[in-house]
Image (tube, rainbow, N blue to C red):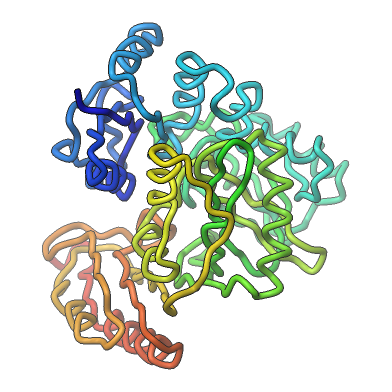
Length: 415
């Protein structure tokens, strides 16, 4: 009888779980946490990758019995939207085997997340959440943040969806009003908004994999981003740090504190940290794998990734404490300077001729509507580069920018 693994919301790169488990003789089963695939992830939904697909209609008892019938080797979240449902299913089927149930909200909702980190005494950014402008204004006044730079964002979205930066001296209320009541990428209404002091510094990602409470470092990545007006989080590039870089130890230690605060005991975590003049400060932690092209990139950079560790954990009871860099690797994100209609996507193919080229992804074929790049979800795509030396990587990055500049997006009304 075949063995099975249950993957909840295995959109986009999380579908690679299916290939990795199937390669070890385990059949992947998909469960979507919604009655239909999320619209924001339709391009990344690959039903053909799975032995079977089930949709959650709100009847938890029925879902639990369906999952139990597969006697799965594991139940794994493939997306932010799956975190709480995975917590509930794992606790129902194998009590005590998952992450701390009482802290489930802190692993999904940015407001209880911030409260849990603060309660644990972990250095943090001042954060508040409310649906009331009056309450928000009072909190800003009480915390000496009036007129200071702020970040406003949804409580339960993902990536950089809906993240707004308010500059020092700028009125935060228009951004607050635009976000409140809007629908985010997970088809959830933003009925409460997170307000956070802005932390200038350098942003890092710390990806980990935990087994029975032991946290293993998978990769540490330095982000470079830029801003488009009042929207922050437009991805430019990602680079992997050497494990002996002094910053890695600082970031790893801080991530352990945060992971403990939100009850991480098992599986993947993706933690975004701003390294400020006062030390590391949490932006957010997610109890799921790093998305985008992170798993492919990690395999090139380190020879390993979170998906591979999950397979070894659940099939071999293996734990890996750290990582090594085997090859300089960079993800270069592509952006659109304006919205309109894609005219010449084929110019991006020139990137395939670069010495360090590994893979190109462009989400918009010719003739398709292209949004102006404002966050991760409105990027044109990405180019994955990996080379034996850093010099080649840097030269090819410059060439990618030259190629990107040749992309023509016809503004509305011209086609």
